[in-house]
Amino acid sequence: MYVEIGNFYYYLYFVFAALITVGSICFLKTKSDGFKNKFILGLLVSAWLLHFAKLLFSPYNELFPESIRKVTFENICAISTLVFPFLFLSKNKVLRDYMLVMGIASGLAAYLYPTEAIFDTFDSIYFGRKDAFSFDVIRFYYAHLVIFLAPFLMGYFKLHVFSFKRIGYFSAMVLMTLALIFINEFILLQLGWINPYTFYDVNIRNSSFVFGIPDHYQNVAVIFDVFVFDFLKVHPITKEPFYWPVIWIIAPVFIWAPVLALISNIPFMIQRFVLIIRMKIKKELNA
Image 1 (cartoon, rainbow, N blue to C red):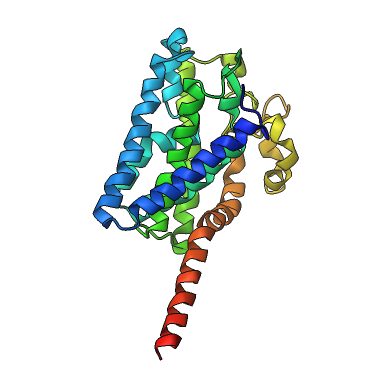
Image 2: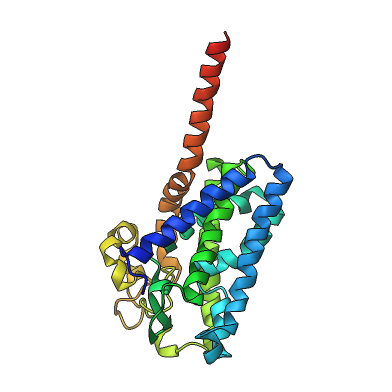
């Protein structure tokens, strides 16, 4: 009874997520904006607390204190879980732009390719398979549902409207996020909590592409590589294949961030279009 891409449990979690999303919309539809804000904040805080609570469960409690690194800024989704409550409370438009786009995109991406739910791994240590309804699998899906759902509700109920006039700031924040992941990895390396021989390995602790493109994503690598100078993919001393951490992806980020923002905002664009059509029809009927 495991989660595998395309099997029953893989789609079952999609169904759960869809039902919770629709249920949340129906529940909040008649509520005040103040209540909606509190509901969304409650979701974010619950995921924030769960992020640290996982250290009490297997396999994290068995690998303590090294497992502390699993609650740090180790990837984009971890950063989202840790900072979204504060971005939401800030009410800053630039920060909320980032929250809306990155939350929807990364939350959906995690459901499409749920690596942590499929394999019971701790970096390069493999523990076998996880039961589809084990604590860590449920935690994974809930955490990433919140990463998606909170920003989605924020956009659906117009508690925040993304502006493409601020797209440059969004791109810069994506790069800052990747830089934070690299700094976090460097600190963990100094603490001796990650293997120094795998620090730059593109296939280990590199789900956010900080150190290059993992082998299992090579089929889509071209959409990034085509915008990267060759010298940024070669070690300056050994001349071996080597992506310069974070720096290599600067150009791709500024090119693809607007596309990501557009795709993430399509549901709200459709929503606004339908609303305009309804208003025109209503106006014509009352004329």
